[in-house]
Image (cartoon, rainbow, N blue to C red; front, side, top):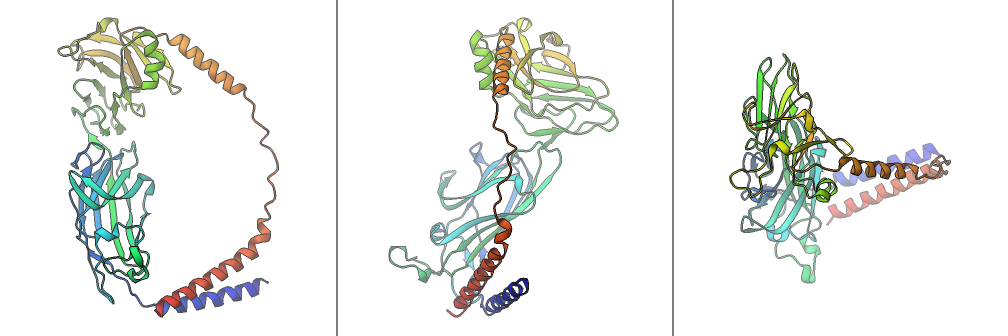
Length: 410
């Protein structure tokens, strides 16, 4: 049986390849593609170095120092596409390429495809006040990397049929051939922004810190929102150093609202370990503006809590000391080797009661039994279907060869 199947398969492959060899190339490729000004879709402004440095020329789109988590738009200028003319003439342009009845959009991610969350095609999209037929939208995955990551791939728009295959209301105004292809190769070098000794990144910036070996290192975030000072060892490693001050609304509702507390957040994302010879000094800066804010708490009466991996708070007020001028910035300072996630409160929080409730919920969830998962896996009969699948593949391949032959003889 195996010999018979092998013979059928070999014959079908020979027939198919012969048909494809006889197929003449009767499609064109885009040789010129124009682009508009790139747009930072997250911040609604033109792309600058905070997102990356890009070059887009015809079928090539390259980016250097591209930031993880970025979302940006690349408009294709209307009527900017010109075509090769190997065998036939193609006159279609952006106003009809945007029609998904005529052209298929596809993305082939190659190297480190996980760094690209999504690439999509937007049509009739306004970018900075200008409407475009075609706009490419890039959404990058977030990353805590401290080293450069390369990702690349290919974006295509390909004609589904000949323009003459359409009729009636769907008849195109301009000519194109089945397989006419617009191809754009993208290549991005992705990394977080590098900061060094005495730098001052903004809160929220996706940065990593590269310390000076065997030296005193200082880093201040934002407008004195937090500061770090430490003595680096002789082979100090880089670490992700993003400070998020965004409000944790779930935590606020659970802990702050019941006692009508005002809360401020200091989340050192990934909670990095500091490459120091001894414990580093971390200072949480004063989060309110003493000149503009109507309500100014007494800093000596504030409470500081640390959030654990389960989302529960622990009172760490006694580990901090408030000072106006003893450290790099005014605020609450402590010695540590790890940057955690902290919450500053103007009122003492009832953490014991809330944490106890959370533990009761966890215990209740643990008491829920699940059905026995040790059942035998039912027999699917897959081994009996192998020969059927092979025969089906042969039939499909033979049919594909016939279609290719028919296409070549048009």
